[in-house]
Length: 482
Figure 1: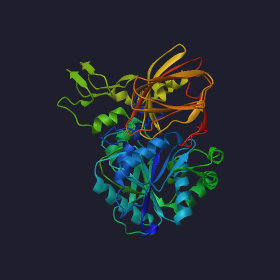
Figure 2: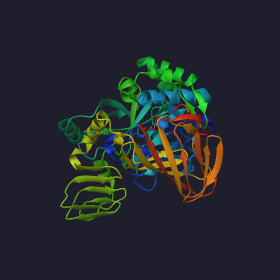
Figure 3: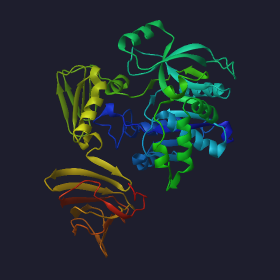
């Protein structure tokens, strides 16, 4: 089957998910977490489009900071993307879709593309495929199709779509596709309740299906600056290992806008396919409570939780025991370095906490105690005045960059596995209970030459211990400028 016969999925994985703090953070956002099952939301999205008779291999658009996690998670579920395109910064969905359309058009000409946010839950896979086939039939006739979900309640966190008459443009006669009569962006509570009572309104899911050329033509008509900047970003982009990097300077010139504002609310070709497929965008802890398996008191319990005389709550711990007494209609989430306690009906306000942490200079809005790297991960154990202690976990065959530090010295103690150490001109190996000292300013590298995981305790000392105090001289992961 040729590329023109298939729908090309575009997985959008650039979001941060700040309303799901403290689990979702800038370096490990919600789509890269197992929030609704054993797999991450990104992995579930990739599995959803594993239908080679209909879908081509996916194109993934993600933040450059997440590229190694994205690639590894896709590898774990056997997904082979067409490409992983790296955004130097987020510019919202309209530019991301434009980049995807330009990328696909250059390689295959005009093809159908389906935009899929990477952080959605869809329970009905057959229903999802049926809706996609309906949308594809309309898109082949020129429709720019979005997918609408029947409202389950008056929700103020979603946009709404007023369904019009049957699609009557080119490719008319497609059963199940309708004209879009009107968009309403995140209404007030009273307006949302009125729309639900009235009927004929759908939640805007943020999924779209259209041809690459049709989308670019409409975007160029209404927001030509986006198309110009995105074409330059792709033309001046470059391959980087398994990734494609957009040109930073060109992409920085791109205006930020959503597909809804830039195109869908302006075009005459907007259409909607209603789809009751058990959809949720996992936009808050309340959304996770709604879709979660509940006990006989209405609690969703994740991890080692003891709930005494408590009900209708989302209770989650990522490690230590969480015990609650007399809790009603609450969210309690505990991670290794933070605890969130909030009423369920104020779950949307978590974003305000994240903004405050940013203003106050706390790193806890961005990173967990455990931070993933392409070679493995590190976990902060303790920190104080002029010292920091970490546990490094290095995967078999992996190695850190050859680097030095201007402000800190390091002491490494091997606790598991075998380490190969480069220290200045020396190269030597260490086993469990052996250690070495890396003086300030010395070029050094740690690698795992074995088949088992390497664990090292690293003690840092110096007048500055930030992660940006790294000068790289060689790196197999191409992070020389990161």
